[in-house]
Length: 431
Ligand code: SF4
Ligand code: SF4
Image (cartoon, rainbow, N blue to C red; front, top):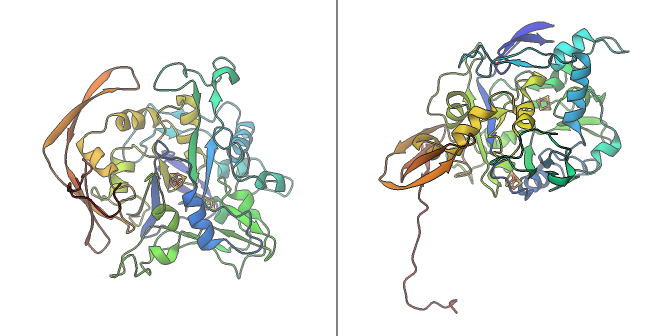
């Protein structure tokens, strides 16, 4: 094991390989506040990449209803339990020392999947990452507990604490859309005894080399998000490929000039909850200062989007804007201690944040830079904040402009949705 720095944990941690960082990193922000659970993303991925024999249960993109749903079933609570057993009562964050660059969420003091594996050798000796192999039954029901709510008469008093006050709801669920996080320190890659898994230096996409894979399923065991899957017909494992031809700009129907396009799941999203990007990395793995990149703005500058289970330690590159109505302690366990700050900002976004939020699913090309043209004031809203205090949100009809990797303008969105009034004369299809 070597020591690598994980900025999401605010500390160094053990990892089996020395760190090598890509030039650009595939990353995305999902906004569960807007997800309607329509599964269009799921089917866009399925029909593009996983339609053959042996791939029937491959849902590289899935959308599960939390808190009860999960694919495979209970993937997260099982691993959280294993980590708690490895380090009882100590899986906690110290939020007293924060630093926007090095430790924006404070310091995680507990054990990651790599720390826990090192300290707790199993029957086969020390593993690279703490994990488990789901049973066939757990893989069998991709959308179990769809739209099943928690709380209300079904919850014991105080189970999630604090859920009696708005905007947290007494009865709640939310849709959690998931794909491979193309982690900075992938658990799948760490666990593979054949070194068949690699992270591409150009964009950080994590792939399994099918010619090297022997189907030992160690990646399935070692991915904390359970996004590596075993295919019995070929006896190899497969995973989300990040739609790499689109990222390479090979789809001329989207960009005739060869600029990178969003993945299929992102481009198909009906609820406009997804914003994909590529973030520039420095050679030491830190994020390059790129203040007008929308992902850099949402994740690093405003911290309105947070990593999924950062405590697992893989430094996932998928980020989520936490759903406002869900009990806070549930969210803190899932997204770390930045939840209150993120929800506070999302509840009453200022001018720039509101403009950047319009870029979600605005174009199929990946937006590398945005600019804002200021418009006139068009209204005011009274907003009740999570703390109960009220704020006045001023609304301006600003225009946000998105540019692709080549610096070409690809999208222009205004805050006020344009309306078109049809002329009064009758039309062929009018009643
Ligand atoms: S989410 Fe899982 S499969 Fe994807 S890179 Fe991370 S550890 Fe590997
Ligand atoms: S397409 Fe978008 S809105 Fe529909 S389930 Fe997927 S992430 Fe949610």
